[in-house]
Length: 177
Image 1 (tube, one colour):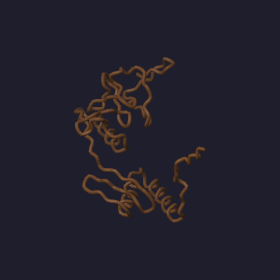
Image 2 (cartoon, rainbow, N blue to C red):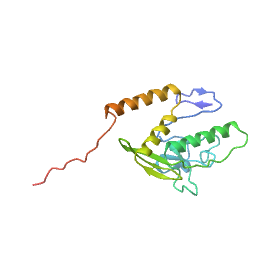
Image 3 (cartoon, rainbow, N blue to C red):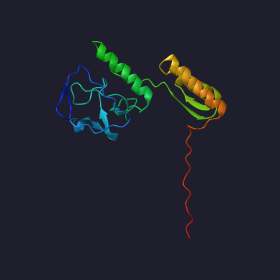
Image 4 (cartoon, helix red, strand yellow):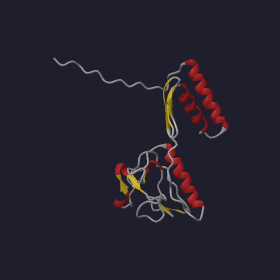
């Protein structure tokens, strides 16, 4: 059961709460379960420290390991791998501990330019940009979504549309007399 503020009960076998990227203070958790940045301490099976049937994954989860003593990075690929591991653990009789595999990172840095830092190689420029486009396009769900996004990208590329770019400039200081 899940109890609401009003005292109502909601019957559930499993409750999954998607909290976004910022963790709110959750009343009822012990101080031992709290970590830096308002994250929640979890074990290798994503179970919240000191709790019986509460799990946390993604940005909110703080799971230090030998390779990541300050916990895993708060990026999508960690959350995706954790979600697959936790779902498998819920379905199967034998739970497996989470092992994060860093698949690398990529970023666009301009028109026809990107950087890619993959486990086996590092490169930049046009090739990295095309790889970034491909990886992000293939990660979308559904053929229709892929076509729509690809057409949008082509339109923006051909028209030099910069509507999604944000330019931040340092504030100019006034000269003191």
